Image (cartoon, rainbow over all chains, first blue to last red; front, side, top):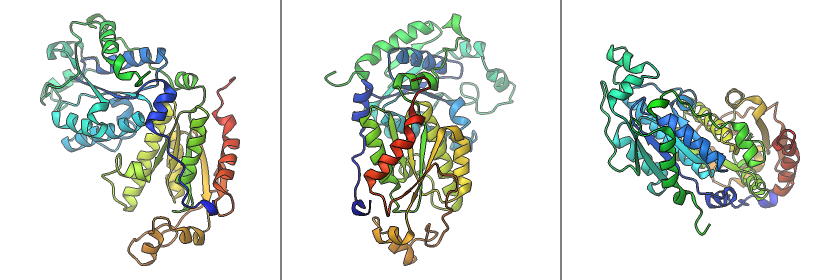
Length: 200
Length: 200
């Protein structure tokens, strides 16, 4: 290396990784109320994409809050920072050639706009997982709505904190009407051309 | 989905991703002084692994400090947090099936031990990119040693802050003696069996 001090190997580009994988890498962002079905749909879509031979990763509160963002709480400032880091992480996994599915309530347009900036709007596919609050609250899979109504959780989206509906989502899925497999079908249909390599 | 509220699609496992990729995913950690050649070797190794059809990603100060860790400075506390996040990010990209090459000075055994904990020792391959300080300082590719000697940068590893030599590195490469391509050859030799799928 002494003779090669300034040698910089050509970096492997995202395009080269996409070519190796046989598909484009994008970020698919799921937003919606707690209990709307974001993680369920992300996992179901991932399973199908993987079955088709695509490289995938799901990011959600469970795996991010325990790891990368374990130092963060739930104050407004920490929630913003949480989503910023998720955006940065998603950008990196996308750069690695991986279709990255991110499932986060992300109730504020300001945060979603920042993710769009970080990832690049051309790389982002936004899905609004819509479901009436009453239905989410009836499901209450994690028992969080009950706690929020009893005041044990404050600033809970839909109950004591606002959810700003996205106006620019590429796809809206109403999970009080559609089955999970119907949702997966619609997502795949919308994504096919976006995942195809140019000229491929 | 109403009938499927509790439906959880089986998550795609790391093993399934590795099978799809045809190789195991691990984290390769490069530690050493500034100017020792960490990023150079990470990029050169990545280029070769990619040429062989492996999925790869390089994490280094340049792409992490501008993104995921853009909120951090260079205090001791922030440096620790920087490496913690890099460890968590590397764990995620490894989970995604990607061979993750991380090039960071990481001068303290405490931080390297934490990365080992986060990633899991069985998933980590540590390379000590050794190079005498005098040689790094002569190279001074980024002009940082000059600034450190002039007092313009404080706590600079090797000059005004310690570098704790790793005692448990899987591979030690002295870049004042070996050429870049010799280093790549040694790394590939050590990694072949670790990247092979079990029974593959």
